[in-house]
Each structure stands twice: as structure tokens, then as C-alpha cells.
Image 1 (cartoon, rainbow, N blue to C red):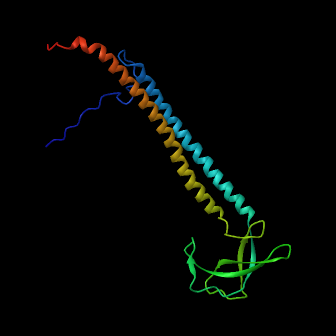
Image 2: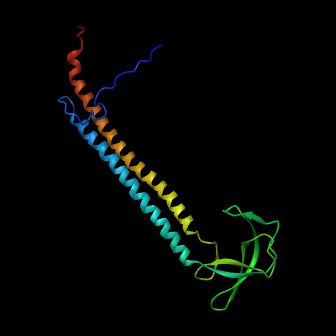
Length: 197
């Protein structure tokens, strides 16, 4: 059986913008609104994505600048049964450590260390400006990856919001056009009743 293909009418894609004496003005407004909506959605997506990625990278950079690494001494052997897997896939165990601040005071805390670490050994820990034990900051590559992921999400959301707003305005224009047609038909309809041809 031969496949039947329908020829596509020329210029149907831009029918709202073509000159036609029967075209209502609302079609022209809707056509330009659709073009403006797509352009604004693209601009909003790019702007929100770039702004979000930059903000995330700056925030992580500030966090990295506010933290510093120091050497800490293990007070007890790392607990063998209390290990976990870190984000990089490596195994970590929990141990109590002691560290000395720049003013000479010492503090203690519990942190993740290499499994099998022995009391008296040293490990690297991260502190904030007040000397409190904190997690290691993200590396520059991790910051870029997080910025890219959140920037892409923000781009999708920003562009989608603009498209949704444009769709809402087009739906409102269409609803008004249909209401006008209903009103006009209510006037013309009584003249056509009873005519069967």
C-alpha cells in the first residue's frame, strides 16, 4: 500500500502575522506576544542560569575562604564498627580529636577519619573563623559543578515561568476572542433560525 503524504500549506507557521483582511487584530497581538514570550523566556533562562551559577560559586568561594585546615591529634582509636562512606566513595570512621587554636587554647570534637587510625596519630580537620569543627569545603571543581547544576535548574525554572506567563496571557486573549464571537453570534443567530435552505 502506498503511503499518502499531505502537502503542507505554505506559511502556516506564521499565519497569525500574515496580512489578511479577515484576520482579527487579536491574532496579530497573539502572534507578536508568542514571539516576545519565546525571546524573553530565552533571555530569562540565560540570565537566571548565569546569575545563579555565579552566586553559587561565589558563596562556596566565601565559605572556602572562611574555613582553614589544621592538624588534630586522635585521642582514641577510630571506631571500627561506626564507619560510613563519604561523597567520594571512600570509607570513613568516627574518632575523637583534639586541636590547638592560634591563641593556644585546645578543643576536642568528633570528626570523620581514615578507618584504622590509631590514638596519637594526626589527621587534618577543618575549622571556621571561631575555631569550631566544620566539614571540609567544596573544591573549586565541586563548586563549578554545583554552580552548573543549580544554574541549569534556575534556567529551566526561569524560562518556564516566562513561558507559563505568556501562555496565560495568550489563553486570556483567546478567551476574550471567544466571548466576543459568542456575543456576535447571539446577535446574528436569531436571523438564521428558521432558514433551512
